[in-house]
Amino acid sequence: IMVLLNLWAFRLLHNYFRRERWNFGVGEDWRYADMRKQHGVFWIVSQFFAVSLAQHGMLVGLTMPLQASMAADGSDLSFLDAVAAIICILGITIGSIADNQLWVYMNTPNKPLILDTGLWRYSRHPNHFGEQMWWIGLVIFGVSAKHKIWPICFGI
Image 1: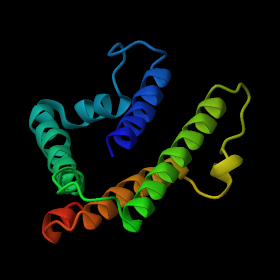
Image 2: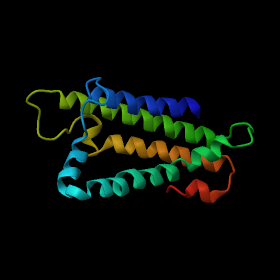
Image 3: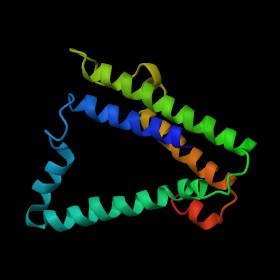
Image 4: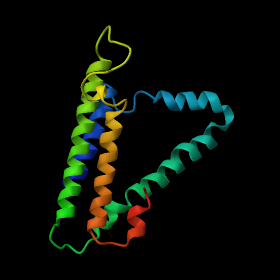
């Protein structure tokens, strides 16, 4: 699981750094700048609840299956573990392909209005589809660990 987790994290980190032209922390995400303009003096409060607190709770819930998997008794891998690994690998692969296709599109001069080639021909957000496959794979790892079910399903 740790190898898969590192592959997933590398994919996200690489995509972020590439988008920022390898300049860490130089630019600000345009969504936060828009929120600051729209919310005015209440920006600090709305940012705390809408961004920090909400995302923290979501991440804790989403990672509960990972905790269940990591706390497992160390028994042999099962068929369900193999299914989970395949789903996670597919999710990472689909996300990576979609990220690369979007990168090429965004850096193409005189591009069409809508990206409708490659994986983007089949979905408006194939990168999100890959990401969801990743999280579903983690849930299956958690189920396979035969841990209590409520923490595993907390993030669903």
